[in-house]
Length: 168
Image (cartoon, rainbow, N blue to C red; front, side):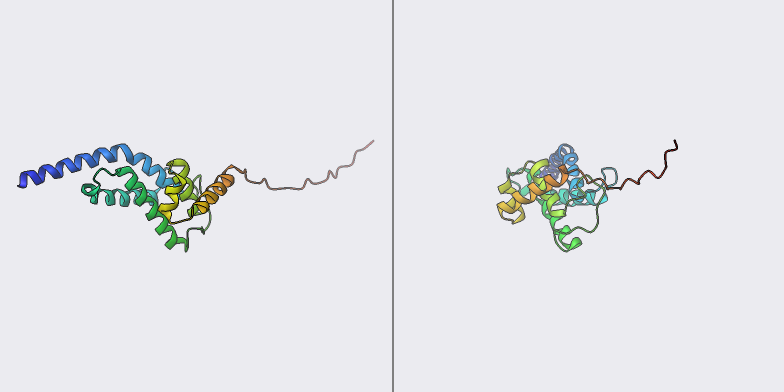
């Protein structure tokens, strides 16, 4: 009995290790985009990924054919949304700008943009996952893309008139 249990545990660990080896890099990049941290200094993203992977490992035997990547991504997104809600008092607000490429976006806009464009999640699935109306997801995604594509306005500096006088 113990041998069978030990063999099951070893198989489970090998399967999970193979999953992590294949998926952790992409999931870490998604988490880094969500937290808007620089890729080389992303402690919040790494923590978010560790929690998501731990959650997936705990439910590994109960997946029954469910995609573990999808399960981990769902937990990553909902955990980020919950943390952003508590950290910023809501998903729509952000205190200051962060350094990452999506730092100019609100946490909610980052979440929707990462799910839709980086992860390829359908609008309907993103709306269901986040508990938002479909039209709200579409609008937030469109605004986020427009914000990222709009170049920052250059500061306007008036040109000082030439005070030199020409001598004949």
